[in-house]
Structure formats: structure tokens, C-alpha cells
Image (tube, rainbow, N blue to C red):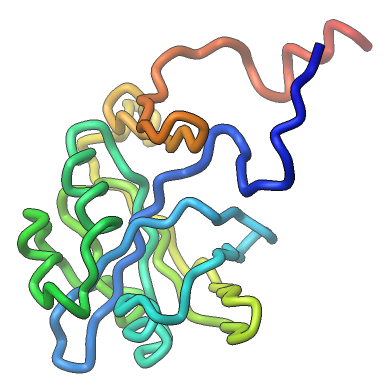
Length: 186
């Protein structure tokens, strides 16, 4: 028997995306976002509150990066989601993050998070607080690549957000092969 939970923003799991941008002063800012997804081959769309400092910064610069949260950086990833950049201007540094400028957009790559989308701002809908960005490049630190140049999830150690229990979970085990296992039912 199912139990109705009501109309709530609960999907399972949700990504742990760390959005980063440069402020007008050149100082990097970062925030944690879960309401996001790839919406086209080269687009990402996110629901981001316009009052966030990082949102102000990325709108001002027209660029941002989206890094995948990782198990080794779970404390820092959570920190940038619970502390306001308006109240703690150096929260990026306090999180222990270091920035390297993207070669493709005017935004910082977070050195401690080895997989990132480098994006140009396409639009931001003020009323719906919906941001759409063009994915200009995906960069991966060599430390998470396997011998074929593919991202090794065991080296990356990505995390997801469990909104039902307010926890972060590490993605660990392969359970099937995409675009292959279903062919058994053809």
C-alpha cells in the first residue's frame, strides 16, 4: 500500500551540485544546489533563489561552474549550502576551497572538486528563479580518469542528496549496464 506524501519537491536522489562564480571584486563564491538537471545536450537548468550571492555573481559575470559534490568534500559542500555569502564574504576560502580560473568561461573551477561543467549564462527567469546555462566544457582532473580517459566513479566518489532524510549518500555500486541490460526484454 502506498502512502501519499503530498505535493513536495522530493525526488530521489537529488544531485549535489556546487555552483561557483566570481564576484565583482574577483573573489570566488559558491553555493550548494540540488534542484537541477541537464535539459538539452549542452544545457543545464537550475532553480536558484535570486537572493544568493553566487546567483548575483554569476548573473553579473554571465558565467559559472557546476561541480559534482564528492564524499571527501562533503563537509565543505554542505557548508557552502548553509552559510550565506552575504554574511560570510570569505565562505569559499573558509570551506577550504581553492580556485583555478576556467579556460572557457569567466568563472572559477574548484580545485578540490575534480569534475565540473563550465557554463555560460543563457537566461535567468526572475519570477520562476530558473537559471539556464550553456555547457561550454566539461573538465575532469586526471586523478579521476581511468586508463581509457573516462571518469572513474570510484575515484570521483560522487554524492547525492536524500531529501527524505536530509542526508548525503555516496554513489558506490554498479548494478547494471545502461543501454544494454534492457535488451534482454526485447
